[in-house]
Each structure stands twice: as structure tokens, then as C-alpha cells.
Length: 275
Ligand SMILES: NC(=O)c1ccc[n+]([C@@H]2O[C@H](COP(=O)([O-])OP(=O)(O)OC[C@H]3O[C@@H](n4cnc5c(N)ncnc54)[C@H](OP(=O)(O)O)[C@@H]3O)[C@@H](O)[C@H]2O)c1
Image 1 (tube, rainbow, N blue to C red):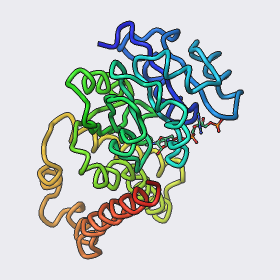
Image 2 (spheres, rainbow, N blue to C red):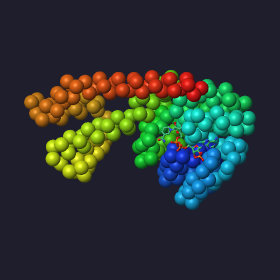
Image 3 (cartoon, helix red, strand yellow):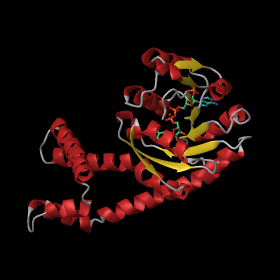
């Protein structure tokens, strides 16, 4: 689907880097010379991407908009307005515009474009750097199936993709957007527990990381409900039950639910502030 398509990326930061790396190294079959990247000030970032991945670079957002079939906005939410000012009048119905900017709605983007351009809002997470992102995609009002397919192909190069209604994006921001940080906190706790119990930091780190990775892989590969997986490894009066008992007394699951809800509310607030 993406064969021979020209992809323009506005922004040359962390997200842009992950996407370029993912696209070039994946089976998607995008030639590096079909990717054109721009940013605002840091020319050295553009040169780094050109030297490392062989992509084309430019200092002009308008050039990216004029020469690409698919344009990805990968700038901070507060910079989206400037980008739309640069490209809003030149984009056409034949192009696809994807934004990864947190809190920026498709409606806001569409309002700032002169033509009926297909817009997709993507919510990846930081694990895109290791090709394990959980990315949610929401369609704007002019999107057709082919647009969603193209966006799915792009974000599949950096992990797994889920199509959602845009109204779900705040909840998704709270769950999978902020989620890696919750898991890091869980790992911090496991590591500290190991150290307190006499293990070295390295031993605790290796054990905690492998445990989280293994548990995630079990859930993904078996497709079984975590509740069931947990019950399978919790024998009555055993060691795991003793551990789980404390977590339940301390409201571990309830805390996670509240954390996701709080993050989702914050996402809503930020969205209103930006727009
Ligand atoms: N990083 C993640 O894991 C992640 C996860 C989910 C969503 N996101 C979203 O991805 C977006 C980008 O995040 P990031 O972490 O990649 O940010 P970043 O590292 O700060 O990069 C932002 C880039 O945007 C460029 N830029 C700013 N204004 C511009 C303009 N007017 N025209 C062209 N380029 C401009 C900057 O150029 P200069 O440096 O030259 O100023 C920089 O290259 C954000 O909206 C964020 O919400 C990121």
C-alpha cells in the first residue's frame, strides 16, 4: 500500500526518529529517498537523520506538504498551529495528513486546512523506540478506508496498532500513552524490593525487567486474560498468594484504575488549553 508513496515528516525529534528508523528497517518497503524530513532550528538533527538513514531533508514545511503523499506532523502540540499555518493552504484531497501531537483533535486540524484533507490522529507511546508501541489511530471526517490502511502500515513499523473512535483517545492517553511510566514504577518497586532483600542492583534489575517482559509476552502470546494467568500461578497458601494479599490490601488495582482516569482527565484539560 505504501509502495512508491512519498512520506513527509514535519519535526525531526524523538518521535520522528523512531518512525524513520521503524519505516526503513521494517518490511513496509519504503525507500529512504521517499522520505522527506524538516524541522525548525536544529539543522544538525536533519543532517544526522540524512547521514544515518539516507532520508531527504529540507528547511521548508511547505515543500514537505507540496511533495509528499502522506504528511506526518511530529512536533510538540504547541507548535502544531505554526505548522498548519505553513501547510494549511497547500494540502489537497489527494493527500493524507497524520498528526501524532498529543491533545490535538482532527477537528482542530481540519478547521485549519483549506481543502477536505483526510486527517488521522495517532497516539503512539514511547515504546515505539524499540518497535513495541501501542498506537491508537482515530480517523477524521474525510478519511476513507485506504487512509486508515496506510496509517496502519506506517505505525505497524513501530509496534501494534488499534483503530479507535476519537472520543476514546483521552482514555487511551491515560492507559497506553502514560502506561509505560506505570510499568517503570512497578519495575522500580520490584528492583528496590530485591535490593532490600539482599540482591545486587544488577541482579534485581535483570530479574525485574525479565519478569515484566515475560509476563507481557505470556499475555500476548496466549491471549489469556491476566486474571486467569494470575490465578494459574497463585496456589492456595503459596508464596505468590502471600504477595498478592499485600497488593490487594494496599489497593494496587484500584490505584491503577485511578491513575489511568486521572491521566485521561489531564489529557482532556490539556487538549482544551491547547486548542
Ligand atoms: N516521544 C514520544 O515517545 C511520543 C509519544 C506519543 C506522542 N508523541 C507526540 O509526538 C510529538 C513530537 O514529540 P517528540 O518527543 O518527537 O518532540 P521533540 O523531540 O521535541 O521534537 C519536536 C520537533 O519538532 C520540530 N518543530 C517545532 N516547531 C516546528 C515547526 N514550526 N516546523 C517544523 N518543525 C518544528 C522541532 O524542531 P527544532 O528542534 O529544530 O526546534 C523538533 O525537531 C508531540 O506532539 C508528542 O505529543 C511523542
